[in-house]
Length: 512
Ligand code: MG
Image 1 (spheres, rainbow, N blue to C red):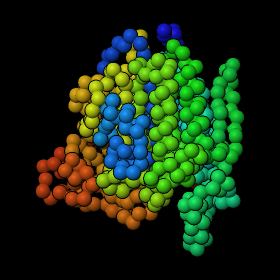
Image 2 (image 1 turned 90 degrees about the horizontal axis):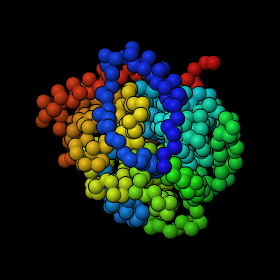
Image 3 (image 1 turned 120 degrees about the vertical axis):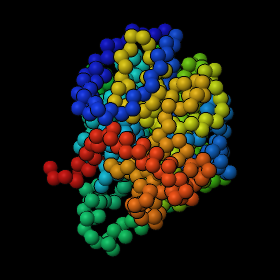
Image 4 (image 1 turned 60 degrees about the horizontal axis):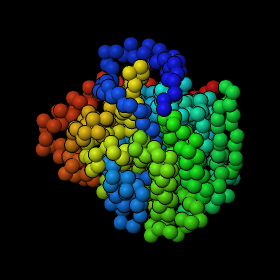
């Protein structure tokens, strides 16, 4: 049963602002999403399960020899395992902003050049002018629940319930951001600007030791419950969060949400806190895997995916639910054994090499999606337009204008070629690399955080054929001048289409 569709006041008001901005840039509008006019008898539920810093090589189905992930592998077996799926940024906040808005970080401003992610005490956070996927679905009559890490600002106006989620239970930012007895954000900025190299080295050494042997007492992350009652937001905080309970508690809340949704369509977003370092897992998973603490943590996430899948089945909605499992960016390589691996992809979190931005991604919708491995290009940027197409009823307003995403419906349902044939790779506000078809061109390269490869601007861009050389090892620029010309032109066209916004994260460094 569908409930009456609400008047989409929320989206319309924001669309007005968005359209006004778009008129100014109409000549260089982004490529429109190829929205299909589906008229489903019933709107499907949408479930997005999003791991934090999980690498391309961290699941059995993506080739890890020791970490066992039977539940996600089963999703991949009866659904689709995508080989070439990208996030829009190789770090948390911009990646999450892009997933929820369907827009590139440089177009929304949800990025930083000096500050890479949102930190505690952020005065701004997610701009209210952006339409989130949760808001768009709320306007289509969906119940919307989020259980997990937000990382798009921790100020009251930035929290998920202010951006389309009926309810939220989770941490506002990364699990390593509230150190006990260590400098806070402001002190850290002062320290890094002080030039006191010795003090900085001492601080980072102390921190590394804590990451390597994590104790709950080293951090005091807040765990927030947020809802709206009688038109008022109600937020309560539990602090410190016991990090070893987070995966389990998110899962329990997600299952409660599924069970109470009844016949109403729902959007469930579960952005796990793990396996972002420091690593914590439930006692049942302590030492369970062959892969150490990291393996334990990934196996607990796998358990969670299975439990959520089981709840969907029990509620009788499995065959009316699209489930997507993905990760927000590549593995945090500087954490060594405490971080993940990108498999055969080069580098990890923080870079525009494949290891930073290509993520394990599985789609499942039993009875609707044909199963198999999909080697078409897709991106979290495309989820907004795709979900809008899959949930569209004739009376619905089109809210996909101004997106950087494509509607992947036909690729998902019929395995046709992806409408996404190109992918820009930004680090902060700079276009570092560009993919078109199997080719990827690097204008600037830089290794993962603290991994040695310094920022290098290439006068002659590097060129890799990703299908023949997925590890980006063999630069073939000299061999393919015509491909070089084609990619240069494609990247230039892309740049023409983007009016790069100032970096919102860096505002914290400006005098106020
Ligand atoms: Mg992350």
